[in-house]
Length: 442
Image 1 (cartoon, helix red, strand yellow):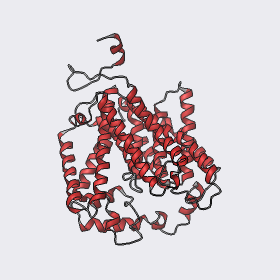
Image 2 (cartoon, rainbow, N blue to C red):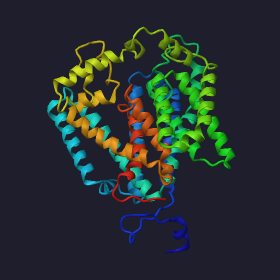
Image 3 (cartoon, rainbow, N blue to C red):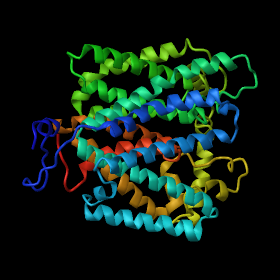
Image 4 (spheres, one colour):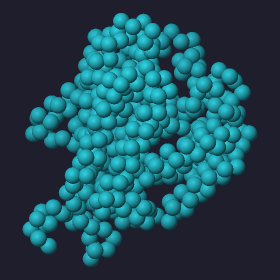
């Protein structure tokens, strides 16, 4: 082995000490892929405004989904091309995990072919889900090859993405602030809807919190920029009015504090300061209408007379979805079928049930839901509990991201929309090594 190779690799602990894995420096292809994660929202924001896609109606979600699919396949191709085979990563998984995954795949295939009222929609969702699985395996393979450096790259990309995207709001506001007919809830720069934009912002906040926790006291410049960046992201989140995102982030922070006492000791002042400053600054931003503004969200909550009204009719949707689940309780109706199953015309406009548990019950029944809980929960819970070991501290940004988006899935569609699904896949993918039979440590 040459001197250069010795400097570029580090030994890792594996099952067979005579065949150690080696960590490699990320090459240009990996750096380009990670940079694409950070730049995609900015590029989409610019394209939506410059090419007038914001006024394109159904063109907005088409361009959005194709762009995120391209990003996923770029990362998957990068993993394969850099000597980190995607499929081979599955060979490291425990046999029980693979058996449960096979069961879930069979249920999903059965519902698509024989049950789903819209086989076309179920097939498309199945394709997106399969891409997300490959993306997660690619992330796991790249982490196995590069080490925890890859986790830091992904966390920084998610954190910087929404900061780089923020100026596109200034451009859009300068163009449309005097247009009374402009729909500020759906005609966003780079996103089909305000709630979907909020998913990316909360993922950026979660990643920023993890990066600040990992920063050392002597890294004053890095900590300063992280403080400013997280404050700005809190400001954007409060301005967007996403109440479910607030709850999900606060619940995630509390949970990690309980599991990792050091996180509470180090982060309590940082969290209070950035949240307070972000909420205060959001009040200074213009309110273009709709559900924008922290103040408007608080007023809407306080003036609601029932839980259903507070939840913007979600309770009605959940009751309806539960009744649909009881019609086929074992294997479900197929993925993404709720609009075609509900008997209420006013609910048929919804793409999903705004609850990951009920959506799974409707789609895959009890058996498929138990399998899905095991598949996702095993990765998440193992990674969360491993944070008590100081050697796993590097994974905390991705644990925060995954926990936040999965928690938000109980109130919204983070499990359904392509970008949040792919972010969850990336975060769980880099955490996948926590359950692998053969895992490197750096």
